[in-house]
Picture 1: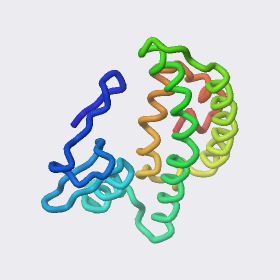
Picture 2: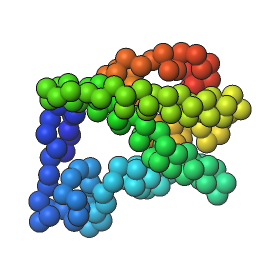
Picture 3: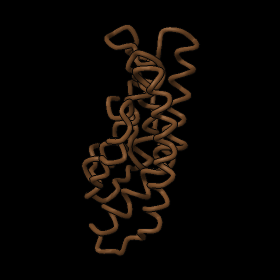
Length: 165
C-alpha cells in the first residue's frame, strides 16, 4: 500500500496481516510476513544478494558497517529529521501551529550529526565504505524530505563530502 504524508495513515486489518501495530509498511512473501521498513529493506537485500549491487556488503565486517550506519540512521538521523518535517510541513498542512523552537533545536543537533557524517565521508565514498550500500539507501527518504519539503539544502551545502554523497 502506497502512502504519502498528505494521506491519512492507513491501517490494515489484523485478519489480513500479522502486523501488531496495524500500520504499513508490511510485506507478505509467500507464507512469510514482515513489518518495519528497515527490516523489510534488509530482508530484500539479503534475499536478492548477488543480483546487482551488493547492498549488505561482501564480508562480515562490511555487513557490520552497513548495520552500524542503518542503526545510526534509525536512532540518530531520522529522529532529528522527523520533528523538523512534522513542524515545517505536516502541522501547517493540518492547519495547526508549528513549534519553531523544536525545529531550531533539531536543526542544531542535525548540524552536529552532519559534521560526523562529513568526517566519515571524507574517508570513504559512502557511509559503510567505498561501495553504495543499504546504509546509504535508508537515508534517502528523510534526506529527501529535508531537501524537497523543508528547503533545508543549506545543511548540506557547506559539507563537501556530505553534499557529494
